[in-house]
Length: 363
Image (cartoon, rainbow, N blue to C red; front, side, top):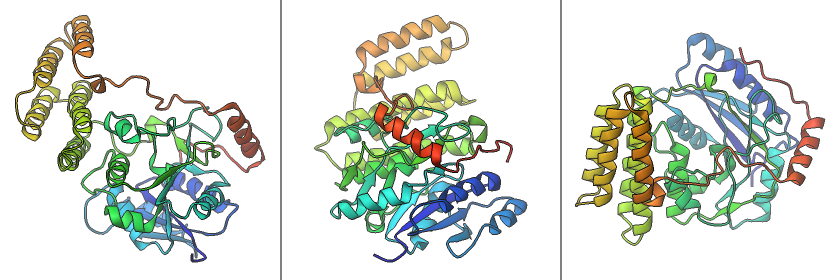
C-alpha cells in the first residue's frame, strides 16, 4: 500500500463553518495515513472562498464543474481523484473519532480478502457522546432484506471501501439525491461484494442529528423526483434476477411506502401518489390483489387525511393485516439501538480524553 492509505471524501455545499469542525476532527487522527478531498457542489462565492483557505498538503479542495448536482456526483468525483487504496465517505457536518482511521486500517490489514468493512457509527446533536444511540443495529445476516424494507443497517460513513470495489460497482448513482448510499450498498450485496462487519468495534464516526442543518428539504421537487429514480433503479436491478422473487416482493413494498411518504410530505400528494401507483403497475405488470388493496387504502387516505383521521388509521390497520408484512416493517433498530455497556464505557473514556469541542450551531 502507498503511504496515504485512506482518502476521506467529503461533499460540501454552503456549510463552511461546520466543514471546519469536520476537518479538525480528521486532523486529530492518531494515524497519519490519510488524505482528504472536499468536493464543493456550487456553494456561494463567500463560502467557496472560505473553504479554499482550508486546503493544505493533505486537504484538497475541488469543485464540481459539470454533471448532476448533489452528493452522489461529488462523492464520485472525490473517490475517482483519490490517490489512496481505501475510501471513506463523510458528510460535511459529521465528525471522526480520533481513533477512526487507525481502527479501520487495522481491520483492513487484518482481513485482506474483504472488499469493504462495516463499522458502527453513532448519532450526536451538539457534541459526540451526547446521544447514546447507534445509527442502527448490526446483524450477522439479512442485510439485503433490511435495505429492501427501508431499515438501512449501514450508514454512508459506516463503510471503508476498497477503491477497486467502487470501480466494480460503478460508484454512486448520480441521478439519486436521496438514499444514494443505500442504493450503492444494495448493489454491492446483489453483486456478492464481501462486506466484513465489525459490530464489536468502537463507534468511530459521529452522525449529526439536527433537522435545521439539512441541506435538502424532504419535500423539495428535485428530491421527490430523485426518490422515484432510486425506486425504479432498484426495480430494474431486481427484475434481472428472476430467482429473487422474495426480494422482488419486498421491494414492491417500497412503492407503497413511497405513497405513504407522499401522503404526508408532498404538497401535491394526490397527483404524486397517482403517478407512483401507475409506476408500480407499469414496473410490475399483471393483476395483483396486493396492489388493488394498497390503491384502495391510499385513495381512502387521500380523502380522509384532513377530514376523518380516525377512519384513515382504521384503514391502515386493516391493511397491516392483509398486505405482506414487508410493507410494514416492524422491529427496526434505526436510530433506536444503544451500544453494549462495555462499548459505551470504552467510548466515554475515549471521548473524555479527546479534544472534543461543542459545535457552534450558528456556524
